[in-house]
Length: 291
Image 1 (cartoon, helix red, strand yellow):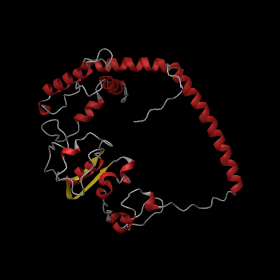
Image 2: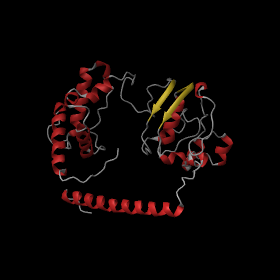
Image 3: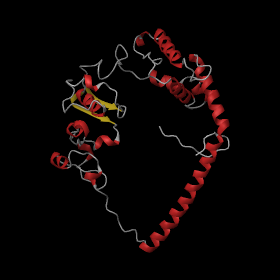
Image 4: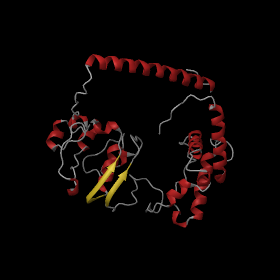
C-alpha cells in the first residue's frame, strides 16, 4: 500500500476527523480510546473469541495471539486505526460493515483451526485446479530450518532465510496434474540465485487456448522460449531478457525539434517537482516533522 503526501491546509483537521471515525468505528469491539493503547492486543483477542462464540463454524479457527510480546502493540493499533477509516461506499453502506459482509460471502474451507501453512498444513491432500495467491514477500522467520526434508521441496530446498520459493513449491505441491496457478512474488525472486533459489526456479510451459488463434511472439510484450534459452540465461526469468523491445516507428518529428520540445517539457516537470517538494516540506513542518 502506498501513501502520498499531498499539500493541504486542512491536514490537521483531516487527521482529527480520521481519528474520530476510527474511534466511532472501533467502539463495537471496545476500541473506545486510543487504538494503540498497551492492551489493544488483548482487546482484539477478546473480539476474536466473541466472534467465534457467535459463529459455531469458526470455533477455534480465528487467531487469538495479538497480545503476544513480539507484536508491537502501537503498530497494531495504528493498523486498526487505518482500516477503521477506510471509506467503503456511502454512509449507509459503511454502517452495515461492507467489508465484513464481503468476507462472509466468501465460501471456503479454512480448516478446523488457525495454523501455520508450512509447519501444519491443514489441507495436505488438497489438489486444486486453480490457485491464485499473493504470499508475503521475503519472510525470513518462517522456520525453514525445521523443514529441510519436506516432501514439498520437489525442485530444491528453499533457503531458511527467505520463504519466497517455499511458497512457490507449496503452491505447486497443491496443484492438480492439469492445474494452473497464478501468484505474485517480490521482483528479486525472478533473478535471485542465493541459497539455491536459482536451481529451484523452473520453467512453466506456455498454455494457449484454441479459440485465441495462433500464437505469435510480440517484441516488447511476449515471447515463447525453450528451456535451453532459459538455461542459457542462468534460469533468470526477468522478462526483458527474452521479450526485447518493441520496434519504434518514425513519428516524423525532426530530432532537433523533438529534443527542444522534450527539454522544455522536462524543465516544466522539474519546476513542478520542486513546487510539490516545498509544499510537502511545509505540510510536514506543520505536523512537527522538519526535514
